[in-house]
Image 1 (tube, protein in one colour):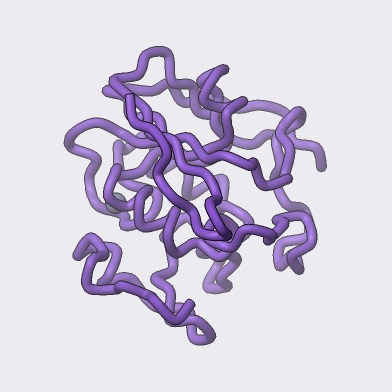
Image 2 (tube, rainbow, N blue to C red):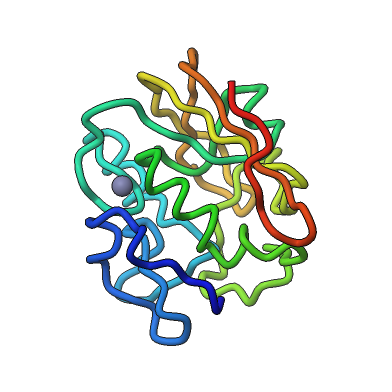
Length: 179
Ligand SMILES: [Zn+2]
């Protein structure tokens, strides 16, 4: 994390509280009753933000299109467990998020702060080889059974404006295609 280009962060994301260890902005959706977990989203907060059309990273209104981040399977199906965000915030997450930016990081091997982590049934925690950012004018908020029981939010993108693809080249996440 030596090449943190923090001046390029969207202002609202740059103004977020920082993780003490790495100096990373803490997305609003990764706060759990005062504790921070970069791996697990807070489902209640994710729902509140998505329903209020606010960015799940910087907490500012999503006035224009919404961006979703996931692997090729999410991009194909249009179903997301992670809530919508600004495109600029999604791009910052791709470059800064410890679970995305490092080529060999595996979410499942990370220490879990929240033990009853809310992983929707059918969703894998493995990091995809390729990340797809889907940009959409709208989305549908729903819920689905969690692996640990109960319900977790699920976000459906019925139509998309465009998408951007990112892959690991020599260990660095690089934009490979935009359409
Ligand atoms: Zn944002």
